[in-house]
Amino acid sequence: MAQGSLKIDRARYVITVDGERRIIRDGSVLIERGRISRVGPAADLADARADRVIDARNLVVTPGFVNGHMHISYAHPVRGIFPDDVGSPLKHVFALQMAMTEEEEYHTSLLALLELVSNGTVCLLDPGSTKFPDACLQAYEDAGVRVVLGEAVTDRDAPFPLPRYATTDAVARTTAFIEKWNGRLEGRLRAWAMPFSPETCSAELLQALKRVVDERGTSLTLHHGSGAQARKEYQARGAKSPTEYLEALGVLGPNVLLAHALGIDDNEIDCIARTGAAVAMCPVTAAKAARGVGVNGRMPELLARGVRVALGCDSPNNSNHLDLVRAMNMAAIQYKDARQDMRQIPAEAAVEMGTRLGAAAVGLGDEIGAIEAGKRADLVLFDTRRPEWQALWNPVSNLVYNADGRSVHTVVIDGRIVVDAYRQTFVDADRLFSTVQEIGERLQARTGITFPRSRWPVV
Ligand SMILES: [Zn+2]
Image (cartoon, rainbow, N blue to C red):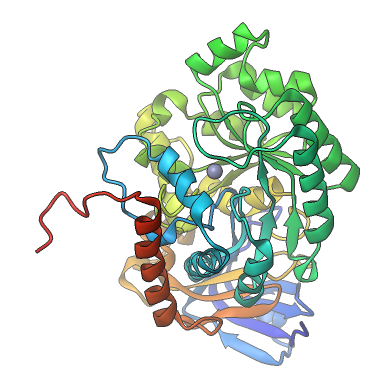
């Protein structure tokens, strides 16, 4: 898509997350042919002309947010149906996911993308739950996002319904998926291998998929957990822990992203750091699902070891919101509480995970994640003319501790404005909301998965 030039002029602050982590007061950004060509103090860019100029004097500019683990394919129509006391809803989650039709998945994905983009996410990794990428391609195209896609595969029994294939078929499907999809959307679509988890995939499958991504210069993600019980089970199979099991198989490396990574011990952190693997953590899911980051969360140690840690919102029935600013907030506060130490996960670290580190974790560190000349132009402009942005002395603190995605004013992806002063133009939102509500009714009726609406009487 041809892009005109765009100048973001005289921003109140530009939080660059560049190599020096500069925050430019009264800063400007020039975008040409989809890339950032210049960034600096407004006075230095006074001569810069553009097809469109945004007066940003009341705006704070940040890099676009990267969501490193975000299932967008099924949950919106049934968001909120699981009561808090139902226990883990996972078996229902996967049954609902398997029951989605092509048309339902398109609308559901479009709604998820609307929520993501409106809250400042420019790039998401969907961990393999989208069944009909052909149908959903138009939604990704319309929303203008960057997306990492794959097909979840397993070749072993799982405690919940997942797509299961013979090992050779799982490898063939993944290879075909990567060859068909990688590089589509003018390079904004990346296709990865997505074995569901080490427990639901054989060693042969994991090793074969690692070879597939190594040969094709792409990457692999999988759900990954550990904890005392899991370590015992892996020890019975001759490995010290789930992470060391993956390392022994040769399945870890810089092109591998481990999702969740809760319950890992010091040896496993060594293993992740040594192999250069990345991690995507979902802090709101961890809190809402009572996963106990005080015992199981090792985000501070992973960051201290230089591991690329991305943040994710997981799913509209887990986090349940799709707002990376709120995920940054949770990451910054939950470790302070869990460790009873206010120095844990400073606001700056939370912003790094949402931008620069998250981009690096999904293999796009050279392209996005910072406001630097040469990078693709993915930016979020926050509206400071709102109460939660007052008073404004430290914009990183305002962003992480006061604000949320509701103050996202304008979003630029690849130099194209996809949200313009709170207005998106890619979807008729009211009609979409009604459609998704109807899909939810049909889906519950068809699957029989439904619960009392509320603990309080709905009269
Ligand atoms: Zn997941």
